[in-house]
Image (cartoon, rainbow, N blue to C red; front, side):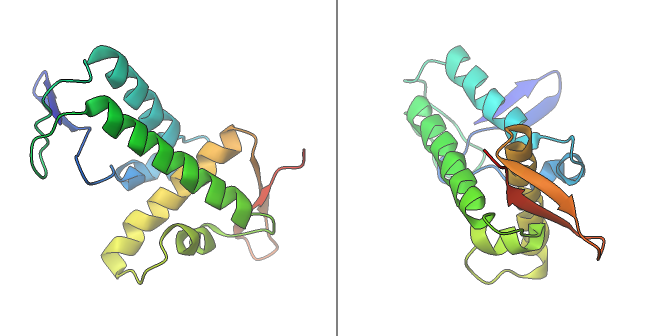
Length: 149
């Protein structure tokens, strides 16, 4: 669904495509950036503001009904990805290693940029949730590990 507000278009809901968080990569690359939290919050606000039986006219793919169901599918998708990341971080992992957890297929250079932004968004979200800690290695690379209980 494209929302139009004061000459700004926001591509919020797509019927078969999950929004890529890498467009917020600058925010995701900083520890304080939390684009996944912003995205999940926007889903909740949209669900509260728009009736579930509304006809959705996405900018990609065909129109559909069932906005609330689609929002829940997207939120569940990110919850499952977060669980995968936490499980992988039983031992320290770099953001690049987490890309391989989230995307199990071969990625070209273009896709890798989006995937890295997506991984960083999930890692930062989990740090803000106190589920992960971040350590700086002797090699200057940050690694993420499951937070101690």
